[in-house]
Length: 291
Image (cartoon, rainbow, N blue to C red; front, side, top):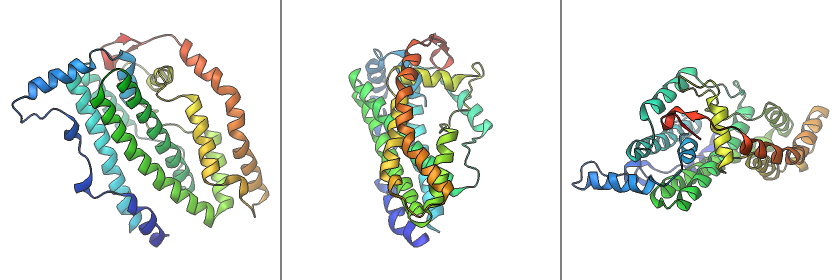
């Protein structure tokens, strides 16, 4: 698949010189008006609720893609980290500790060395990142912070390109090996997709990701409905219902995946209502304020 990847995946990368960089969206520390720019940024963030900042604190052709993808993703963290620092709304030491704990804990997304599981996971996760950053941009705009909306919107556009790449790879694998791919799809859905940061810890809260997810759901950044809609999108995009020539195990997996969204629909309202009713808790990221 290397020639295919060269023509269908690498084309989705942008040359570094054409990419945006975090500094383009932040006060310029070399300018005479730096302090005024920082004060203006802080003024714009002054009326944004604390809950919003909780939800924001969120490498042949294959090797070229993986390295470039990682480099692109790294900019997202750099930009949001600097923005949060300049906003004066968060405890940066606690965010840095959370990042160190998370990197030290490693990441286990349940795919092992199985490329089918990995491609399904990344297709799902990149779609989720696109949705959550897009929703965050909308919320920032509602609170009058146009620059933060622009920041989250440009990150969302990167995540959309990444989603396109991984869903195209998965689509090709469904063409080459539909039976094993649909089985992998079903297995991934049965395990449920855990976001890369599900092992996050800040030195205080051992259930930090769960509490973060509740806040994100409560304010509409990422909800059970979004999860279900991603399943529906991928089933349709990969034409899972139309797969033929499957083994009995493959047909069973096909049936499971195609019916999954319908079953999830019956539970999503309950999950979203539960998030709305969940008790507020203190977050170290925002100086132990309760949200």
